[in-house]
Length: 500
Ligand SMILES: Nc1ncnc2c1ncn2[C@@H]1O[C@H](COP(=O)(O)OP(=O)(O)OP(=O)(O)O)[C@@H](O)[C@H]1O
Ligand SMILES: [Mg+2]
Image (cartoon, rainbow, N blue to C red; front, side):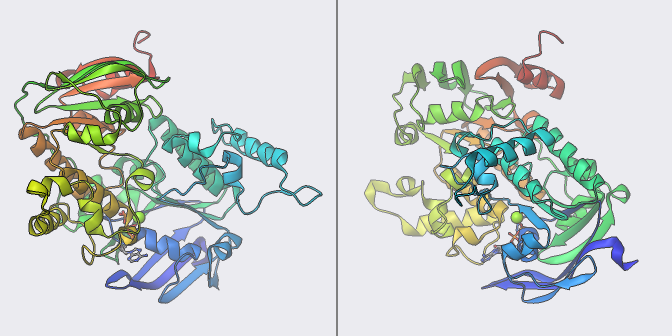
């Protein structure tokens, strides 16, 4: 039966200079199902979706929607056909409110042909009520956490009443509570007959939510199968083309002297009297729900924000950190969670992005050792398998996961003593993920100290020597590796430990 498929994409090819992003691929999606699209970083997933919504023009191939062949020339055309997309890289307008972001470009007008802000806010509120989204439409976008921005993006996609909704890594920045909310939304949409194309690197999500899965490898179609017929292992093998274990087991490292000590750090309501120590060779996990203050703790230590009070000691000596430069001089590095806003310099090359923070390290006596720099960059590219035609490529042309790898390498190249990493493997495929875990583990073995924020429980449990848990700006507990379980951490994270 041909029309059981709401969407059929056939023989799609798309090339960029030096890259065949899609090589004669297909995608067949049934109405009222969740169809996962999987593959390693750079496999072509986002590119196919951008072709579908009309953001990119395909070189060849056909798109059939509800049995009718369609040509989509721009994103407006895509939306008119009933296709909406939640993008991997969020692009909110920070100065506008939540409601304004949702209805951008299709604002309701009053009789004077002016934007009816009150109506717009009511529409947003109704949408939030209908879908149980705990956000205030009147808030400024820039005041929201990345997780809340992602919820806004999801609400926006739903508000178009689309037949096909594409979600490109919608859970990359949200934790379990919001994931449950999102999955409830997806099931409701599916039961109404909407088709969801779901892109994610998180295996467990795929088996929870997807009915079918299509796998791409290096721009080519590999298979389409019902998830009921697959296992995690068969999925990984199909994706990477070889056997691979999902997690890199943490290696044993000698725990040494205290390297970083944070005493009674305070800043607003998200950093309340935070104290902890971090030793050489140690990986300290920082767990908690989104909005618990984990990122703010990292940013306050690093001098992105000024602390209101508190003390920071490195190697037993108090250090004054007023700005990130001071932190870098004290031997710290910070990999930020919001790579678009604070990490990536889109108009620069992969090389420049990689070397942005390392220059000083490779400039003995003030002279830049260009040859060593180039070698170091090349090494990182190989170690992390960064997929790019060359180091000269603009970073914005890399796939999302490969951009993330470049940022990870930027901080590895500064050879820091204290490495603070916020969601280090967000959006990174299984193969590269275990490679990054291996690198972190090696750094610990070399006597570095690592502070890692992660919303992925297996990553926290698998990598940390100790887990610090935060709830509403406060440290609610500290759990040694041997006692760390998902339950224990969730209790501390939700502030329900006493009751349990
Ligand atoms: N605008 C562009 N210019 C040049 N190359 C591009 C452009 N967009 C994508 N590419 C390249 O096309 C290939 C596929 O990228 P795509 O973003 O589709 O990967 P992906 O499967 O979504 O990966 P990820 O899991 O990392 O998000 C990559 O090699 C990427 O560098
Ligand atoms: Mg992508």
